[in-house]
Image 1 (tube, rainbow, N blue to C red):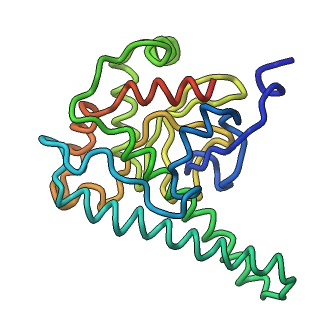
Image 2 (tube, rainbow, N blue to C red; image 1 turned 180 degrees about the horizontal axis):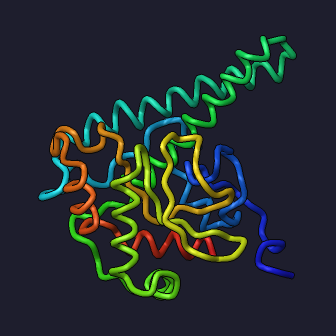
Length: 236
């Protein structure tokens, strides 16, 4: 039995999954359940920050409104849309097709935003630990070197209007740098995000104003590679 047919899938809710919120990506199991157990999609409450500030990179004044207004707002929007869809299904009430489609798209977009924000905040570190293990080997195999990957990732992030990600695809097991300019849009179905950077202005404007490139460059020194290795292992 191949590595795909062995899996019962949970979800990979990202802009890299071309618009669908619940798609194959991460295998169901005790470790995955524990990893996602504190997600806002599970608890209905914002996941607490690991770091309220990251000296030399992001201030508390930058992180706090991002976490509360944008991540928290996405969770509230997702919950409201999901409740309306669930009520419509259970009651059988008729909804105008156009309005219903808009509601479904909102649920996808907001739900994806929740997960992307959780992966972004959860993947930051005051100082990046050494890049070791399976992720290092996979990056070197795919991109030729860590430096070549880093250069391409930064170019992707600087060119993106919303998100840039290093993802692993479960079909061919390859790594890709991808961009998403809206939470429900992206490039690859089933892709599992490993490194996630938010490049909307709200993610950096308090600290960097219009210096997006500087924000992207500093981000590279604050990737929690231990967390990335955990994500890689869960996706393998």
